[in-house]
Length: 337
Image (cartoon, rainbow, N blue to C red; front, side, top):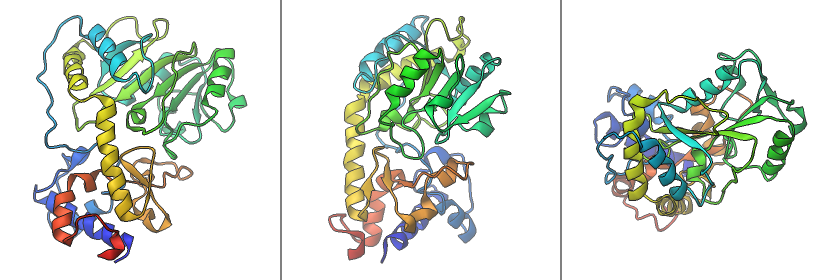
């Protein structure tokens, strides 16, 4: 059995179990499909291309309650929890219902400025152009004009890496009065990357927790603003109750140990599949033979941007079922089956 055959059989096994409610669907929990050949096969075709969190059966969302000081408490808890990855003390944090809300608000509030996005980015020109008249793509830093807006995801989708010259980009933004909005969602899942956000140019940080924790449809996204950049009023009072839940989750699931547990599973499966682990602990770098499952095919509308990786979350979740089905213990390699 070759690697693609093994993954295809795993995908159909898991998809069939999902159709009967016997395996978790992760972020696709709302997707209902018939347990017939066509329904199972269609769902199986995307099963390793969907970048999503691992549904841990022991994971619990704490009860929702509300106090007026929760936003401040959230900022303090976040600063300690995320400290190994970045420093967030200078930002005022609010709960928002989705990362898209942060980006749309950013471009709409700066309607009279040029918005720049990198060529390799999740936040693409076509999408943002629906909300702003002047969105441009840059290939080199020098293309970015003075007094403009930069939106960038770090690590950048495509490579899931942070460029070695990222500080040079921030130096240029400081010098040219370019206001930067960062999407740091995948930084939480990075094995090795950290970033210094103590820069004048960085005005907004967005972090979604839905890739780290199984928080499907809860809207657990936060945006941090410098005082001179973000909304002056709290427009998200109805979301304040989520602050306390996030604070409790941070206390229960420390970032470094949670990611280390995921990395342990990543390395185990990469060894078995003879794949190179990605810096993102949910992924593996995938060769051409596995192009069917490359993750960009699930989320990306830009044919020029490729993310040649597969998501391992469903393998983590269904390890026991897979081992029983193939009568394996994952101590060898896939070609031993």
